[in-house]
Image (tube, one colour):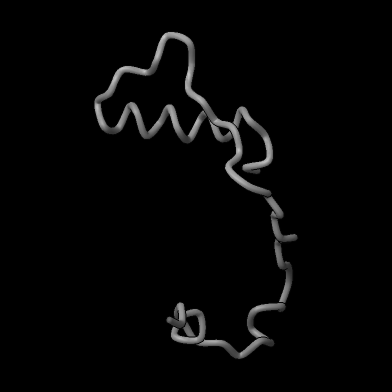
Length: 63
Protein backbone atom coordinates (compact mmCIF):
# COMPACT_ATOMS: atom_id res chain seq x y z
CA UNK A 1 0.00 0.00 0.00
CA UNK A 2 1.94 2.99 -1.26
CA UNK A 3 -0.46 5.37 0.49
CA UNK A 4 1.39 4.55 3.74
CA UNK A 5 4.67 6.45 4.23
CA UNK A 6 6.23 3.43 5.96
CA UNK A 7 5.77 1.28 2.87
CA UNK A 8 7.23 3.95 0.61
CA UNK A 9 10.19 4.32 2.99
CA UNK A 10 10.75 0.54 2.94
CA UNK A 11 10.96 0.59 -0.87
CA UNK A 12 13.24 3.63 -1.00
CA UNK A 13 15.55 2.26 1.69
CA UNK A 14 15.65 -1.06 -0.17
CA UNK A 15 16.74 0.76 -3.33
CA UNK A 16 19.51 2.52 -1.37
CA UNK A 17 20.63 -0.85 0.01
CA UNK A 18 20.61 -2.57 -3.39
CA UNK A 19 22.69 0.26 -4.86
CA UNK A 20 25.11 0.00 -1.92
CA UNK A 21 24.35 3.60 -0.92
CA UNK A 22 24.23 4.85 2.65
CA UNK A 23 20.74 5.68 3.91
CA UNK A 24 20.72 9.32 5.05
CA UNK A 25 20.97 9.70 8.84
CA UNK A 26 17.92 11.98 8.89
CA UNK A 27 15.94 9.40 6.90
CA UNK A 28 14.73 9.23 3.35
CA UNK A 29 12.19 11.65 1.96
CA UNK A 30 9.09 9.74 0.88
CA UNK A 31 6.61 12.55 0.29
CA UNK A 32 4.13 12.00 -2.51
CA UNK A 33 4.73 13.91 -5.72
CA UNK A 34 1.25 14.72 -6.98
CA UNK A 35 -1.94 12.92 -6.07
CA UNK A 36 -2.16 9.22 -5.26
CA UNK A 37 -5.35 7.48 -6.43
CA UNK A 38 -4.77 3.76 -5.87
CA UNK A 39 -7.04 1.37 -7.73
CA UNK A 40 -9.12 -1.26 -5.98
CA UNK A 41 -7.82 -4.79 -6.13
CA UNK A 42 -8.83 -8.09 -4.66
CA UNK A 43 -7.89 -11.73 -4.65
CA UNK A 44 -9.94 -14.06 -6.83
CA UNK A 45 -11.03 -17.41 -5.49
CA UNK A 46 -12.42 -20.61 -6.83
CA UNK A 47 -12.93 -20.94 -10.55
CA UNK A 48 -12.76 -17.23 -11.43
CA UNK A 49 -9.70 -17.43 -13.70
CA UNK A 50 -10.55 -20.71 -15.45
CA UNK A 51 -13.93 -19.26 -16.44
CA UNK A 52 -12.25 -16.13 -17.87
CA UNK A 53 -10.65 -18.19 -20.66
CA UNK A 54 -7.59 -15.91 -20.84
CA UNK A 55 -4.09 -16.60 -22.16
CA UNK A 56 -0.84 -14.95 -21.01
CA UNK A 57 -0.77 -12.83 -24.18
CA UNK A 58 -4.08 -11.24 -23.11
CA UNK A 59 -2.19 -9.47 -20.30
CA UNK A 60 0.49 -7.95 -22.53
CA UNK A 61 0.96 -4.21 -22.09
CA UNK A 62 -0.20 -2.23 -25.07
CA UNK A 63 1.85 0.75 -26.24
